[in-house]
Image (cartoon, rainbow, N blue to C red):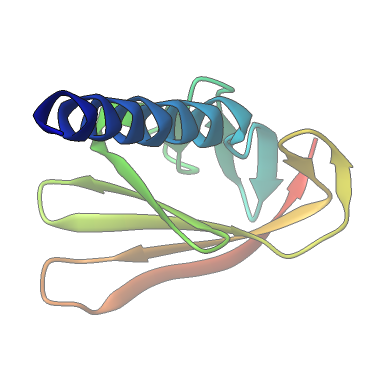
Length: 119
């Protein structure tokens, strides 16, 4: 009985790990270049966030500092939250006609809220 219980626990663990890997492998980040109001946002297929404002001040945040909540992708850096949500039609894997971009400061105040178009 002990051997069977150990076998069953190992089998369940392998199944859970396999399901987690499959979900991660099938999920794709929003990607592509988007523009709006002089701002440029480049989202790489590897999940990196790179944005520049009209004064050419840029920020780059790696995927390791990101999470996903439903359809919204969130990158965090220095207390700021950078949120991207697809709002337009899907063009191809990870690319949308329009995205909503919202930046929230450390005091939870929305300091940027804009729709950007795929370029």
